[in-house]
Image (cartoon, rainbow, N blue to C red; front, side, top):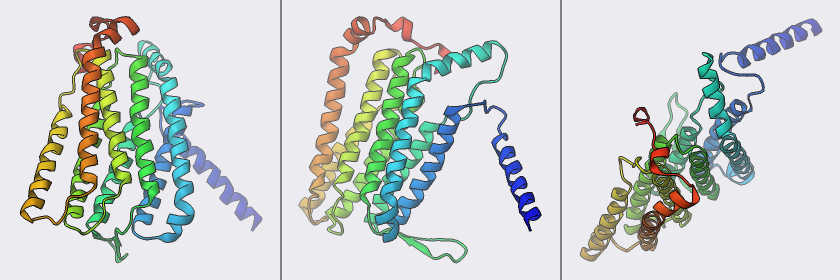
Length: 321
């Protein structure tokens, strides 16, 4: 029996070593790769536990989800800080290895997209709860009935988007010559998803079926402010780089939605005006006004006096578009 156990352990260790060496670009002591893989694992973990709590698993909601959410927030904060602080060093290393004809250092540069996936799911869950969606599972495993919004859902959402925006802004400030256009689009995408989710929930509230979760209003403020700040810094540091899908079109849809809800209530199609409707409109208006005013008043002084750079030094080459 001991011989069999020893062989099993040896086979397990060999398999583990082979697993760690699968990717050809993993370097020794690559903390960034370990952090990225850890965040992928924590993201899958928090998604599972949030969905389980949303469909009514009280054991997970009370005893497991708070710890899982705290671990996710801490891990995401540490990983985002690490990537921001050592971003310049990583870019320099990549340039050196490329000039030497070597392979690029490190692996997988899609942490922002993992975070965007988590944030998207967190934004869709409240809408599924508002419409009491029932989703069947394959292989006779029953189904999911979305029943409640745990408060940890909004904590995970706020921290994920906040870290996404702050980390990308820090990298943009570190190396303005590499404009982060794709990540600006990721934040705009989250604004669109959040706006659509809030509108769907407000319609249910106006029909008198549910009460709007107030925590989602603060999440909307975080997401909209994160995108506005990132877009503003992008326009300041890289004057010739502009968002091709401007966010003010999303803001204008909020105006149209406000008018549609008020008109529907006036003619009796909807039964009430949701209490969160004005907050939704006010946050959109204030963030848009603040970001637009700051960019118009401080763009040139900030570039010339504080950063000491002009547009020609921060503009990317044509290949960056």
